[in-house]
Image (tube, rainbow, N blue to C red; front, side):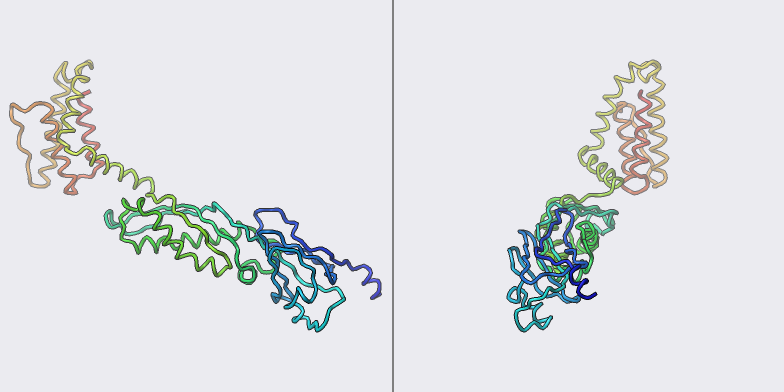
Amino acid sequence: MALMDFIKKQFIDVIQCAENDDDVIAWRFPMQGMEIRNGAILTVRESQVSVFVNEGQIADVFEPGRYELTTNTLPVLTYLKNWDKLFESPFKSDVYFFSTRQRLDRKWGTANPVTVRDAEFGAVRLRAFGIYSYRLVDAKKFHTSVSGTLERYGVEELESQLRNTIVGHIAGLFGETSVPFLDMAANQELFGQALKEKVAPLFDSFGLALDNFVVQNISLPEELEKALDARINMNLVGDLGQYTRYQVASSIPLAAQNEGGAAGAGVGIGAGISMGQVMGQSMLAATQAPAPAPSSGTSLADEIAATLEKLHALVGKGILSQDEFDAKKAEILKKLD
């Protein structure tokens, strides 16, 4: 019976990684029911490393090349198996292949905004995303801490852990910096370098080298971007009074062309001026600063501009929100249509 078992055994003469899937970073050579023949050929291709594991203990590691498996090429395994001379019989060992190819253009990003304290805006929520590249440099460490005895270990399984770790360090990095959000775009390269230094030790603990790390964008959520856009627009306007006079002066000729418009019947403009004065006076009354009545020589554009300036002053005092101001301004100008 023992002789029949010996005859049925399959002996391996050539060991090589036939796995062509780029998404696999670790692969175990199929050894079930087979043994490695003395003098078998091991082929390790470029961008590969092969590891022999004996009863759960890592033995010999092979860099790219072609090897004849003997006691000379398997010194650690020879010691573990107590081969004190050239062995002649087949032997069993787990053989793993690892891809050392550089993984380029890997994506990272914040799934949810990270709340931080900004030097200029106060508490804000930031998003960030970018790319990184890495490669396996220590097959022993990777086998021990990551892939283990799995038959296949994919890149996506690994990068899910890497991405989460990167994002986990972003809040701390943003919290440590005193750079305002408006200046972050000019400092993205520095942020990338700082973040790389924070996460590189984790990569090293997995047997990986973090070769490159880039922050491509730092942004605000959509609602905060709209608020920032409004602030930028106000800065571009500059003198609100001059801008409002220009808008009113541009609207009057259009209103005159409309049937029942302000220039035709005088009703729309009167209502617009009256409404502006009533709004201005009622809002200013809340701050105990009544608006002065417009002089008889004041032009229509000046009166409306003055009203809007008073309302804008309330925005600066926090009595009126920017949205409320925009709504009231649109209401006044609408009367000119």
